[in-house]
Length: 226
Image (cartoon, rainbow, N blue to C red):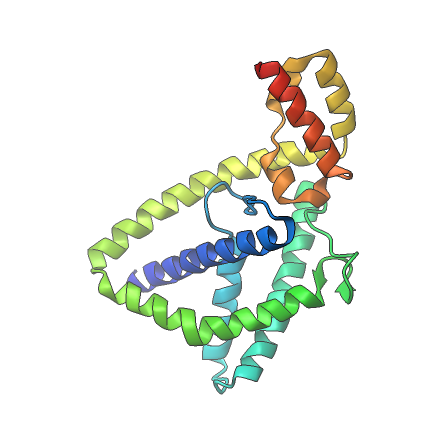
């Protein structure tokens, strides 16, 4: 049971680290803070899964701790994870959540060389920097503390996931028809109250001409409030 708690908190730790990196990365490009997570909380599960995948591969395969080898393994494994996640989410929600087609050296728009290189660099940081840090933090806590923290976080994340999942289903169903919905909203403003914009901001590719549409939607909502 203790090993299960360790794995779960390890997953949470890197989900939070990934969220922080993602938000700052987007801020550097867009100069604005956006919750880039699929869920509402400050965590992105795909980063937690990626960190576990890399660490498990390095440990189980007894790979020599060579920075370049770790870089290559991280680049390949995390790229496969991102590609698979993109494919599964598209099948589940019937919509593409991100697309790198405009970037050089991309694969079906699901992964691109730029992000893959960052995954490789991040994997080196995981093995040499963040894993030792996590282990120190983990072993400072008692078994009881670890158990209760794990249970509380699990309940929060599970609840968040369920809410976000059903929200995402609604967002995906309206994303491709947002133009029409805005026109209807202008005629009947109450309809706009049901439209969720957080996930659309986090994943701009969901809606074509997203910036223009969101600005228009927000202005309409502000007028309604006033």
